[in-house]
Length: 111
Image (cartoon, rainbow, N blue to C red; front, side):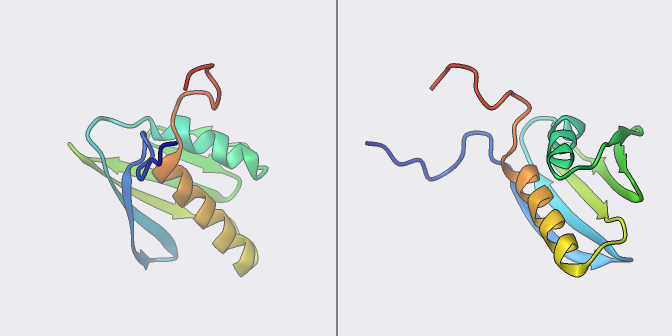
């Protein structure tokens, strides 16, 4: 039996204080991340079709955009109008996607 303390593709992502009604996160990573490939499936899971607009995704009245650096990315999430419970759930789900989701399909037949 083995115990893995860190997920293989995990990124270090921290929440920053909200500004202008936007959730903000700082992601540290060693290689460039295709954020559109990570957030599009996560948004589809909760029923939002997303459209890629440069370094951003537009979903309904919401928007998810990012600014890249050499080893970091600042991510901003503006949610569409919804209840506070739904907003908290959606923000938490996208935060987990930023930390753990990979571009690869969930099952590739490998261990």
